[in-house]
Amino acid sequence: MKKPGSRKVDHVGIYVGKGFFVHASFTNGIHIDSIANPYYFQRLVSIRKYRGF
Image 1 (cartoon, helix red, strand yellow):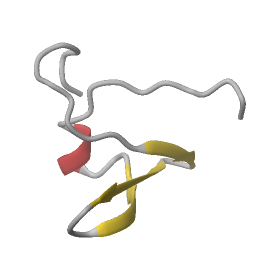
Image 2 (cartoon, rainbow, N blue to C red):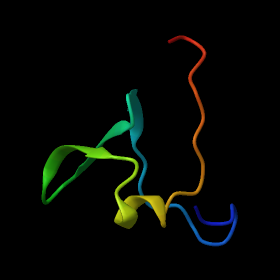
Image 3 (cartoon, rainbow, N blue to C red):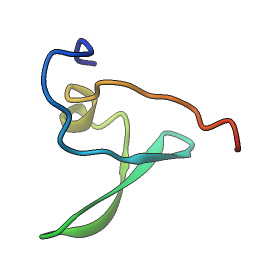
């Protein structure tokens, strides 16, 4: 996990449970990926839980 404030955030995702999050891009559409994927984990800045769930 990156140190918060170390770089500008340019992409966000929504945690959907059981270690997965959903995110989207203009070129690749919607994806569901594991938060444990090294590519995403090393770029992760913050995780928060929405109290409504």
